[in-house]
Amino acid sequence: MSIYLRGRTWWLKISRPGKSPLRESAETSNRQAAQEYHDQRAAELWRTRKLGERPRVAFATAAADWISTTAQHKRSYESDRLRMRVMLPLLPEYLDELTTTRMTKIRDQLKADRSITPSSANKYLAIVSAILHHAHKRELIAAVPHVPMFPKGRRKKFTVLRPEQATALLDTLPPHLQAITRFALSTGLRDANVRLLKWADVNLGMRMAMIAGEDAKAGEAIPVPLNESAVEVLQGQLGEHPIYCFTYRGKPIGKRSNNTAWRRARAEIGLPKLQFHDTRRTWATWHKMAGTPDFELQEMGGWSDARMLKIYAHLAGQHLLKHANAITVPGTTKGTVEKLAAAENVDLSGVADGIRTRNNWNHNPGLYR
Image 1 (cartoon, rainbow, N blue to C red):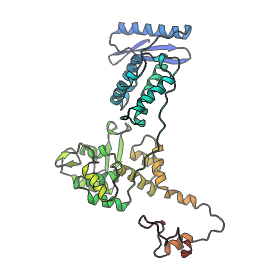
Image 2: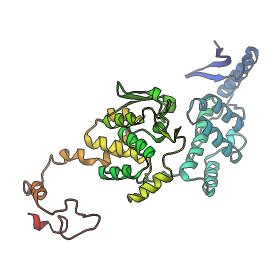
Image 3: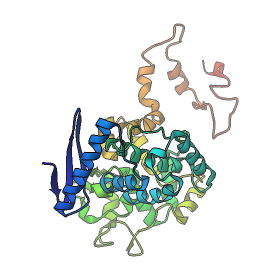
Image 4: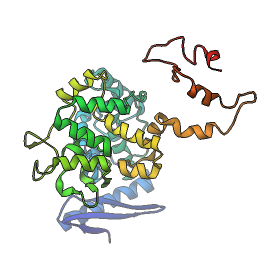
């Protein structure tokens, strides 16, 4: 069938030799108009294939087609539309006028705007690239020009709490933030998923909670097993609100947890750059150190890409120690580590309270042999 209905909208299906059929929305509920559009597109594709002719397509038209078909299924749909509005004035009128040289100049224009960071600029450029590839798939352009991006910066450092630091933070936070933070450290959930958790999504009998796909960053539902700490937190919240698990002064917490009280508490314990999202990173690192398998950790954390786990594997490198000990350099004295651990007043880290001293293994190992 050359045209067919999807809901109330007619779609085209045009066969192409050696390629998969072209499927495209006619963006109309009128069958006759859809058939006319089908015939026009089929003729354009034939002339392109046989005669090398290619109709000039406005970039705005290609962008609208991409937004109405591919982009509407993305979680970032609204953000993509806003970014496209910013980009359109910088782009040429027609698709075939866009070259790599022109895209490099546009990238530099974004760089000159101090309100746009390189990482944000890459998101704008990525949308242009997506539209170009979409247009090429539709055979609206012969080739896709290279879209230069800004190089990715190094991943920013983040804080992983030690147990004693977590205890100090919890003792310093006000009660409502203490409950949220303890639950986040117990489950690894993101800030919004904790703050807006509903009793309807919690089953204390089964010790499970569920984050719906529409509320999850990756778009997939997240099963949340509740350990003893998480159950204890939720039991303390019973009766506070009929709908939401966590509240402040009887109302759901709509704003971010990284607020004034949080910033005051992190400064008091000496971690002025601590972010609430670091509770999730701490949770993942603690699990890696405890030996939780990657597949299970990925599922509990709701990550769509297992590569994210490498961040925490590097931080929790103790699980590699057994493999490091698989070899021993000739001449090594057996029991060195055991002797060191048995020695009194020895700083095993080589740094005492952040200050290097002479009375430690690094500076004077001869004392402990």
